[in-house]
Image (cartoon, rainbow, N blue to C red; front, side, top):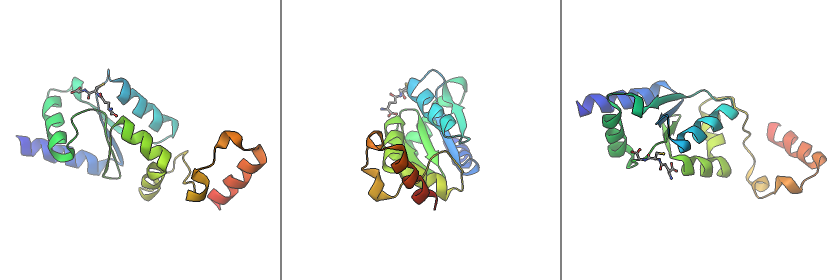
Length: 137
Ligand SMILES: N[C@@H](CCC(=O)N[C@@H](CS)C(=O)NCC(=O)O)C(=O)O
């Protein structure tokens, strides 16, 4: 039974470029789904609280990822982690790279490391344009 559940979890992760193991009432899960919606990235969300096998899936995820909580997020079969990890991956550029490697077109640009320290609020529109040219070029 546990093996079957683990196989199901693995297949779901392989079949979907972005998988979010979620609970429909969980604010952190809503935040994660909102982020991917904002990025125009499609994802498969499994709402564990709405499934009979939800507790078993959560146990399988704990065994596989050492993470008990939801959201439990995978991008391109890479375990990103939970909501805090997703935010860190967004800030560090790791999420952009994972999405790019997966061939997913998103509204997220891979910012070259030298620009990551810049505070975009301090820049003028002209400077933003220059960054945009470099990133897309
Ligand atoms: N710091 C965690 C917060 C996640 C969290 O606390 N999720 C709650 C649901 S809102 C959870 O999974 N609780 C245990 C459970 O539902 O079994 C993260 O970054 O993802």
